[in-house]
Length: 113
Image (cartoon, rainbow, N blue to C red; front, side, top):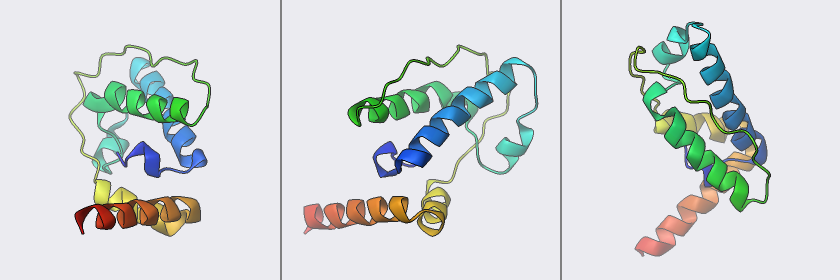
């Protein structure tokens, strides 16, 4: 749920692929309970988030030819992703994402001062 503009290419495209994998699993009846329990999935927001990722992909000049299938997620309990935890994880794991996050924070500081 981190702003797509803050994600490096690898993480932007990786999250996009994950959305398609989640929808495939859900449509086949494969449990996603572990992802819900661990705060890695919000089933009710999959389509909205996919649209945000696609908007950023197109903005960067990437081709997008894979609409997200319309799969019923209403039988799943709601999940909650911690944006703060996700940002900290990206900072620690990815130098490019860390730099994008740092630049975003600098921009916000300039806007508020």
